[in-house]
Length: 301
DNA sequence: ACAATATCCTGCGAGC
DNA sequence: TGCTCGCAGGATATTG
Image 1 (cartoon, rainbow, N blue to C red):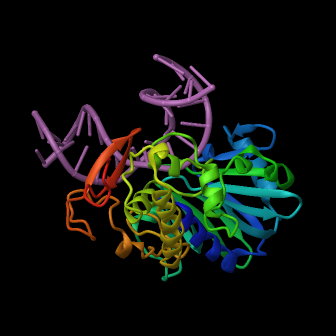
Image 2 (cartoon, rainbow, N blue to C red; image 1 turned 120 degrees about the vertical axis):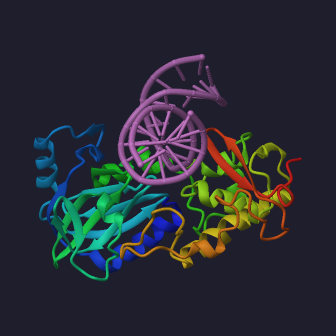
């Protein structure tokens, strides 16, 4: 699932591929993912509104592409912005496809001819013969059209916690943003505390820092807090370097997988041996989610 | 005031 | 073999 490193990978690739291009047209078979968002959120319910959306983006130029937490933002001409959140299974692909018997098939042989293309639910036609496609198996992804100035002031972006790879994200800032109590894994995944960390990287960060995922923040020592702070930076940077994870159906804009798998130590490795000590990796439930950890390296007391 | 739970959606694996 | 059932999961809405 796309977390900060995956979103960062996509954004860097998008900048190389679609910056300064113009929207010509769009297609979707899932209008529910599209929202007009200014002072309110309005879910598109019928074709007329899709046409409205088409009219809004046609002719607009992509002037800037950036990331905030797990959100991708396209700043367009005429004070418009598109915010895309890929949620669990969404990912953006850039290339050329053709519609064949109801399925989008890549024209370009460089694209993997794999089932991922079956889940393309949104397609933007761009200048330069390129298409920007949103593939999303579970249809949780959201595409929001904003007035750029309103988006910048939106709760959506401003309620997010600091960017963990920002130079300003010091150990002191990290300590300041932490709530007084709460299980550390849930705290790390809370986007209003720190932006961009999800299930995979919270598990990996806590393994790296040797901290039990269910431990309460109030019980963490200064040393443990520092280990977690350092691990956040280390794991996220490594994952970006490796172009994201390869465990789920995440794909880069080229359709390729990321390479984080060789660094993955605990996530979805229940029953396997701990890379560090050889103990058996365990899984615990918290809030309907699962946490993976080494019971020896990450002591619960 | 806050925390636990339901919701969205689809593929997949377990169980019968 | 083929059906049903339940689970996974980010963010948000709703319930407790």
